[in-house]
Structure formats: C-alpha cells, structure tokens
Picture 1 (cartoon, rainbow, N blue to C red):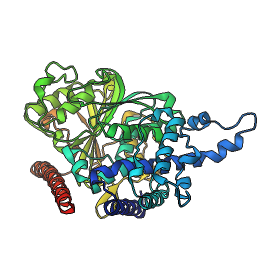
Picture 2 (cartoon, one colour):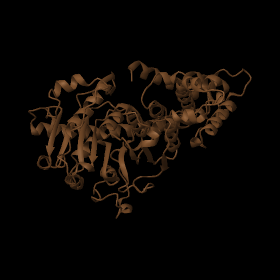
Picture 3 (cartoon, rainbow, N blue to C red):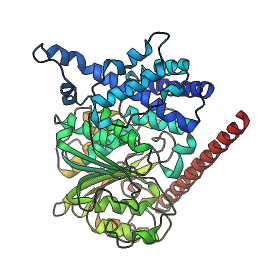
Length: 516
C-alpha cells in the first residue's frame, strides 16, 4: 500500500465525513452503513468491469453472457442501474436516493447470497450530499490493494466513530500481517474457521492464497465465521461476496457460544481476537470442551481464545492467529496452560512483529502458529522462533507494513524449517541467499532459532521469540527488562485507546447538546 494511496483514501473518507456532518442528520455512528454501501458498489463495479470485456467478447448470440459467467470468475454481477457510473450521471430532476436504494435491490436480486444484506435508506440523504459521495467513492478501487473494503470499514470506524471502533481491544488486522499468516498457514483446501471474523479479511486472503496456487477457492475452501457484533455480520458477508466467496457467518459471542460445533472440526483456524479482554464470565464455561487445559484464574481472556483455536483443529489441523505480546510470557495459571500447550507438541512457529503495523494502535504483537500434524515428525519436539521486529517497510511516520518479498522471505524461513520447497514469486531470492546460502535451514542470530521443548522449559515455558532468536549476546536481565517494558507499553496503549473512546463519546454528546 503506497503512502500516497493511503493518504488519498484517508482524505476521501475525511471529506465524506465532513460532507455528512455538515449536510445530514446522521450521527457519526450512523455514517457507516450508507458510506460502506457506496464503497461496496464502487468495488463491485470495478471488479465487474475488469472481467466484463473478456466475458462479453467470448459470448455469442446463441450463448450470450450470463450471471453465471461472472460468478465463475469470482465476481458479482452488477446490473446497469447499480453502477456508480450510472448513478453519478442521473438527470438533474431524478430522485438519486430512490435510485441508489433500487441499485442495492438490483444487486441483491442478481446475487441471492446478498439478500437483505446491503444498506438502504439513501432517500434520507440530501441529493447534493449523495451525489458528492458517489463522486468521491468512484475512484477508490484504483487506490488500494489487499482487503481494501475491510480497511475502509475499519478506518471509517476508527476515525469517525471512535466510540464504536476502539472498544475492547479489537483492531482491524492489516493486510500484510494477514498475508503473512496465510503464507505460513498454507490453507490449500478444507474447512476454515475464524471465530472473531470482523469484516472477513482472513477469509479473503485465504481465498487469494488458493487462487495464487491456481486453484478455485470456492471449490477448495469451506468458510465458517462468528462475529459478536450484529452490525458487522452483514459487512463480512458483503466482503466475502465482493470477492466471489460465500460462507456460513453467524452472529455469536465466541466466549459462550459455539455455533459451528468447532471442537476437532476444522482444518484451519485464523483469527485476530480482541486482546486482554476482562469480565468474561468463566463460571459459564465450566466443562466446555473448547477449553481442554483449564480456566485461567486471572481476569484476561487471551488464553480462552488460544484454547479455542487449539481445540477447533482436526488431528492434522493448523492455526495461525494474532496475540498480545504479553501472552507469550504470562505467568501463574496462564503459564500452566501454556506449558500444557507446548507439551502437546502443537506449537509450531512463533513470529514477533514490530510496532506500528496496526492502523489504530502502535501495539507490537506476536503471531502464533499451531500444527497438530507435526506429531510424529522431526519437528514434534521443536518450535521455530522468528524475530521479525527489524523487518518492515515504513509507509509513513506512523505506519508500517511488509513488502511482498519480505512476506515471502519470512514464509520461506518457515518452509525451510518444515522441509518444504521455497517460493520465489515475490522476489525473496536475495534475502534467502543472504541468510541461507546453502538452501537449507540454519539458526540465524537475531532472526530465527529452532528451540527444543527442553530449551523452552528452561526459559520458564516462554514463547517470546526475542528470548530465543534475539542477537547472539543478550543479557538475561536486559531481556527481562524488554519483556516487562513491552507489557507496560501494551497496557498503556490499551488505556490510551479507552481514553480516546471516552473522549469521542463526550465529544458526540456535547455536539448533540450544542446542536439542539
């Protein structure tokens, strides 16, 4: 994602918010639906037009182009009256709000998986405001790559409705981190679960992985998701449909509900769960098979999520998920649970990620990977620790991501560890030759180390990559200080987010009073 493109998109979203603030009766919390509906149409039309010429060229009078032809290319069919280009050019006297509502209905009629999902109520907006929004959003598809729809959804929430977007440690997962998780997980085929699926970005990248390996995602993957927030479920379905996917997405609180009968049922689990959530009613979870290693005694849900991911896997299943750094070293009952998970042999790879990857917080994180299939292999007693904190691309002062060759390089380190062939599509050859000149895995100080279970036990069952893969000479006291500093920084970040949320609520309340 280029800095200039990111800036353009943010500027567009801010301009949209200003337009709505000045010329509509909507509150910031109500901006989301009409805006995302128009963004959805922009992306749907863009993807439709990208394949339309080829499909129509192949059509004949006897065999005209059909909706099924577009579906076969994983693209939604967008009727003429539903295209932003049509809506922007409506005659002066036309009711644009009514036309946009009809556009949404027409898309749903052509794509039944979207039935009753798309936003309505555009007649509530001033005609001039709606026309301006249509013009703003038409260029968006050319300005962002990756899970752009998911990014715009989260950016809109975090910037214009902070009271909704920053609650409970929930952060949109950046495209490059999701891409890295997918490349390490390698979800070639099977059942995929995300029990905290948000806008569905994990599923989108799973599908892209399958397609990069020249297979059909709709044939190879079965998608299952759960999302606590009722309003977000339609957004996940919209995001899937936008990419030609369908899945079973349910509204559910994954602490207490298991809508997909997850235990032992999935080939892959991917997630970015909310971090450090408190007040979960653990007495309601007694005897639940999703938590085979017991309840953490402290008021923190991280090890509930970790157990959910572990227990959902089939005997040969893999999981990849984002977790707060502090979970890798947490003590007391969490340490006991972590010990049991390590002793199960399922922990496969741990990756430390630097700060500033997330769009709304500066929090550094750790990626965890489970692989139950490594039991009985040479990796059964080992874990690969990857310290990627020094690997990143600086987008702007406040944001980082991974370049494609960096993602491929980190995934190739894991492939070498697993004894798999490396991939060289994205240009990681130089990095591979620099660190692994013989084409075989070796421990590289400051980058990666394979640790045995005995070594992990000697480190107090820590799963912090910096303890193992850090530079060759690290004083133990210094390492302890760094771990503690990261924990304090994590807590500070969480409190800062809560403060921002509270400030946004106060601002909204004051604005409501002053506008009366």
